[in-house]
Length: 458
Image (cartoon, rainbow, N blue to C red):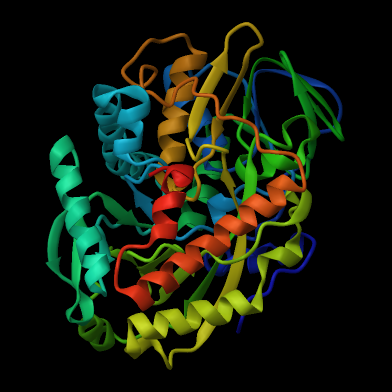
């Protein structure tokens, strides 16, 4: 049955395939007790997604005595952490070339290496926490389905070789198309990861208050609709939902990404398709798509195409756009004809966070005690872990290789006020679709895409 999101605690199962599966496995998704009055802690974390939870996890590794409170408006994993595509990849929103232009070659390669190492760290930490999240490091296939895309594939391999960190290779991909294979990516079940991590933290003494909306923060204190938390350190980990807090409404742009999942397909069909267990896939079009073969043999497939909403609005109704779902099903069938007749069993979506310069960041101000991380542009399933480890070092005053990475203390420009934000973001979305059409018609690299490149981290 197609899972639709409904309001209230009974509807959390319908957030995504991932939440449906964890509910089927026995997680009732019942909200934890809300904050009731004013309390004190050593660390107050705003947001019960992977950034906040990983930060708590690594803080406790450094000092098990810390009193940590996590504040979450809905339930742990409600946002992008429980709705994403299940790619634990080494992708960073800005390309290595772009990072090198901004920060220098050494800093760029350090950031790349940290991202590559993080893929394995997520698997290691999940095992340590006793979390079964279907982690399988099968790599990513980036399909090159046209001559223009093949040229882009070759350029990517050459660029990676020039920096000497990544290990992509050109291979024969599914359907007889060439593809770039990058080994530094794992498939996992994100709902199992985020829900399991929340339970593991509670077992270690972390208090998680759900159904507790944060309305503001300031040095050493967080204000909620149910009271306040006074703390030596405050960590803001809201990703796209940061835009819903008045003081930060232009810090991040909530851009919607939508997904579908099919019924499980037989092993013989997957053998013919050419996608192995643990593998994720995409291609070289400009309007992004992404997919994986799930542990139970489904396609979980998503992409961009949903518009930005005026005033950075986030509403449950925006999670479902039939036009985009139909486009995703059609695109999946074009990529893999064997999937064209598969029943689509789940449809869902949600907002991810986009900074003005597409540059994720981790920050901590020791004077105010306020730290933050985010701006992952959809590449957050691994980046949240790196952010958590980095914030743990920053809050405890350690100087490490992580605190020296170029995304630390990076500050992105604020987004423009409306109507410029609405016009610019939706024109950018249209430009990516136009670039794909341009390449299909001209059989040459898109001029539109080249013009947009600097604006989207290339």
